[in-house]
Image 1 (cartoon, rainbow, N blue to C red):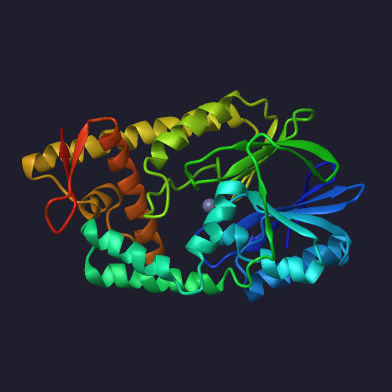
Image 2 (cartoon, rainbow, N blue to C red):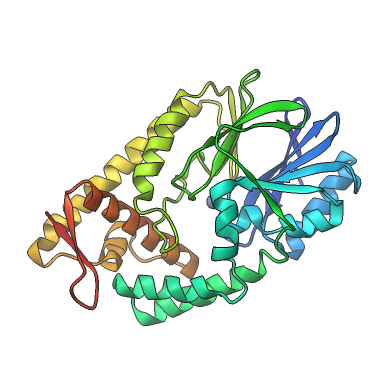
Length: 328
Ligand SMILES: [Zn+2]
């Protein structure tokens, strides 16, 4: 395992995840009062082994961890937090307030949201067998976040935190998740990004039945705010470090402008009969190789369609069995 020292007292730990992104970048920050661990991976044997090796090599012993910070509620970031808390005895697990509130909703032990999500996608035209596979996929992921942390402590927008000896300010940046926050040290410009910005790939902007009504509008606004922050080095949740945060934020903004143009073109081609979210997902992303990808392609297509509905460019028709979209 390659543990990289990315700044003074800041270490990047690649924790393997069983999904196309291959690993999640977790971080360990050393401070005078102990370590802060940021993001955790899924709770599976691969993540346990990676964390044990990392703690061994960095000399982190149980009792040395003052807090665990989770940037957002997605399972590859939250998953091993409960286990890590139990192993290290970390007194607190902190998470942005809106995502902390979503944890018991999305990861409820009865898996209610798995059924809710499948029904939502069915209503948007997804074939029954694909929706059923997505329901199973969600239920399986429920086990990869167990045990959930004891007593998640919420972080408020604008709050000042001590992370590894640094003063860090929390900025709410919704869109990729409802509550995602980035954490910036205004003195040295180091910024923990979670999945707010990524290199080479763009963070998924999904419409979920439990989430924001117009996640893309929120995300575009977050990109603009992100581009104005005095960041010198961005530490993302996946892939490479981001030296030029404003530049990457602008690139991702342009990417979504092009994608919205594709949605308009698909709706124009469909004419007055319109098309479903599933048609849009196929039109934008084609055949997807896995259930995982089909889930995110569908949610991303719907986020773009709903954004154009909110802007008055598309009409959402809910009269029939299936929801349709057509040009206004
Ligand atoms: Zn994420």
